[in-house]
Image (tube, rainbow, N blue to C red; front, side, top):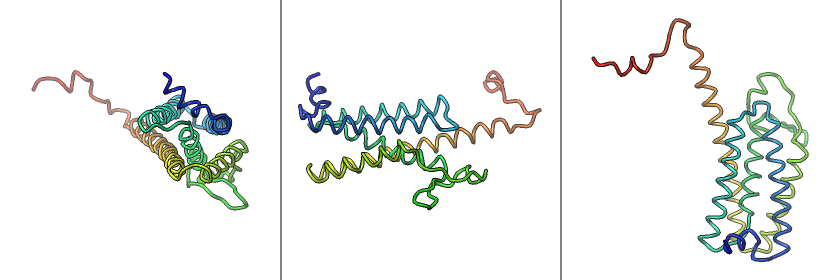
Length: 193
């Protein structure tokens, strides 16, 4: 228990506690807000995001227990990576007059590009500022860990999109059966020959 408290309290470093918990709160708020404002948000989608967050928290605590580090910066960097990919997958965005994003259903429906959510922009600026600060004052391994955490979050968000597409595909396929086609009952598949 003392090790866990040491990890979460940065070994008692007040500046690190303030910086990291503010950044973590803002980034998690922005990521959660983006998830909740998703037009197609469902229980499964929210469950995926919650599970991804739980995985990243467990990873952070496990890593720090094994290698003797302290902190929560992997959590907020992974949440930032997740939020960026999640926002880009939601449809095209208008950033500095240019349309950016991953082509999605929104283009097909003729929706205009949206502006990124101000809370997301603020969270990403804060995240980038903290990463630059720690790149200047912490060992290079910390910067590498922050970069890997951003990638981890992006991969979790991309996997979320793949699972959603697969689920939609399976649902569309199962509802596309002809009306007279009935799936076999379980007893029919196990009948002796």
